[in-house]
Length: 399
Image 1 (cartoon, rainbow, N blue to C red):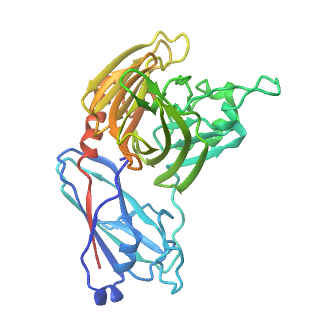
Image 2: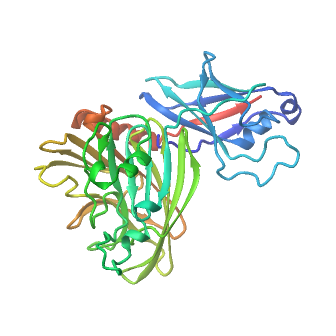
Image 3: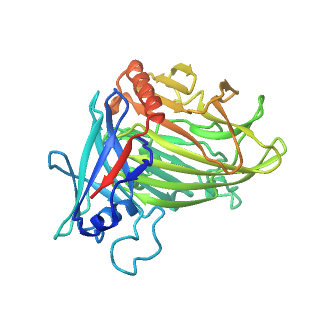
């Protein structure tokens, strides 16, 4: 998915753990739907308890058939040190499994190896892009995105014609290859990545809108949005999952001073990213936050036709264009309290409390990428994301 950190029940005794050379992971699924490319996330401390002394470069993760699976060990929330050299100072273990329709359980093993395991092919990636006015770009093997930093918002004081754009909206780069393209497209430059030269293109319009998944405070009549992100932090960077945070300086929202930290979780094989936005404010007990989709997302001269879906916790678009194909965008917001709009954006709204994260999912797909071909197929993807959001996988770890 944009998947979830899984609840872990560790069923082992300390004596058995000391002797274990193999850890068994059992993952339960209570959906009947097929769930392709689910990321399974296990806190490394649980692996260490079942398999003490395991090192991230000397393990193999296998499915029930004995197939070796790509894996990643992150530095998210690690132990500070490993003074005994037993492998406790890591964060989380990630690997993926595609659940077939009706598959309720899957088992895996983590085994120590004598030889070093080489890194796996990168499918997710993110980075700060100082060479393009502080952009921040990210991608998986389906789609890429970017958003805008302080250098782009700064005035053109030197009078050299620097581009200026003040927005906290999120952009889409539609790719039709499964390998990373962010670095290559920035190297090609603006006049090239706005044309499809074989790998896809930037054809999505953000401007002053929310783009595809930007946020703001909604007072029932007006949207109050922040400026370009102020700072960034990468917490994990592929090959299976990438996690980063963007910090937004405080802005005035109808008298309330609001700041935001947006955490992005990007998983391989998915059309949706998982978002956790934490708003900090004083005064009111609660604010309403809106997540938006631009009403005019196409390139110029594309004679766009947009079908909008407003279905409880999901807000969707299917956009057809004259020459550049069709694409879908979506927001899934499980705690949504309503759907509305302003002059620039379709909006889906939910209440937030200060300091408590709001979880939602932003999705995009281009018909020329091949993962989605029709509006009906996009709606099915959105329905699956909605179901997955409320049916997390559950895992147990035993020696």
